[in-house]
Length: 198
Length: 198
DNA sequence: ATCCAACCGGAGGGAGCGTCCCCTTTAGTA
DNA sequence: TACTAAAGGGGACGCTCCCTCCGGTTGGAT
Image 1 (cartoon, each protein chain N blue to C red):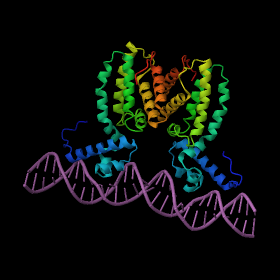
Image 2: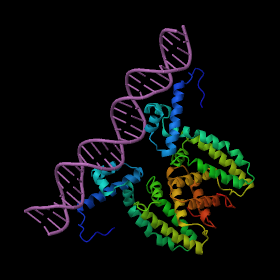
Image 3: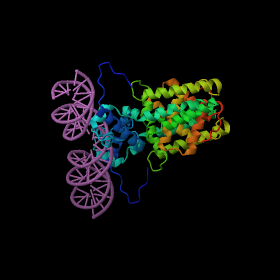
């Protein structure tokens, strides 16, 4: 990810191996138990000591970011297909839904994500910025050729999606209420909202 | 709050006293450090042992509910003034804003609140239901005599406010973005949104 | 083959949660 | 006023989790 100085040593293979084991275990634990899964438990399942985990990932956010990385790449790879949609309004709505699903990968994920937004040194802020950039592109397109309201901005949309994902994860709303919320949100940024097939 | 059987003993004054001390300390700690303030710390500041705190308040939610009680009464007392507003749309918007402030009393409050919504045995669900009932009244009025959209329901509005309070508390959005979010939400439930002063 | 940096993980201190158990205080009663 | 039974009190404890220190080990470079 970052280039080394010319005199840097090649990283040790056992280090890389352990790192991969940790990310693997983290992905499982975060998926099953949410973002507050015990780091000790993750280390134990990876077969390493706690110190090893903390050396590779100084904070829970760093581990989260790595565990999310692969899924994030898949997400961004699918964007071109969405962008090819005939209707820019529809494309924006589809993208919003895709982001909502992505932010629902781990129970409780919206919390650290929204907390990472204001600070730029968090391991989660870079991937977030990429999502916001894509949102901006799709939004601008929908503002030019669709019915998106001119005063809406990409950060606002991202916050909306975060809120939706947050509310969904708590299980407070049934599917109907959730769909109403999505429609209400869409009405907030689009001038003409059509019913979306699921 | 609950009546005792005919042969119930009068509660002891030291018990009531300690209970009040605990709620008092909890109010301070929750206000300063958010809803995850250490219960041990609250007990210590109240001058009681941990067991005493847990006897009076078996869960953190119970303590939260009690700490919120007084403010909740003030809130509901102010409703009549809002209901007297000439414009029902405006009244609904004012009420939404008041709820948002109430749910921002403690850092992190929206989380346990939204989690309490689906279950009816949580100490927080009764006060929430009261808020939803008021919301329903104001919403119905705005649907009859204002421009509120007919498909919107009170639970949806309460969820929206929870989301706003949640997003606000994280500090991810500046005031301008936050105001945009509020307007977007209002566009979602009102047909004609006027700019609100502040 | 040797060196030394990078890496490993057990052990342990610290914080918070929630409970058990024994002692103290108080409300009702004689 | 004196007694009693129940309610209340709190210290101490066991548990989980977080995070760090430190002596021992491994493996890349020469």
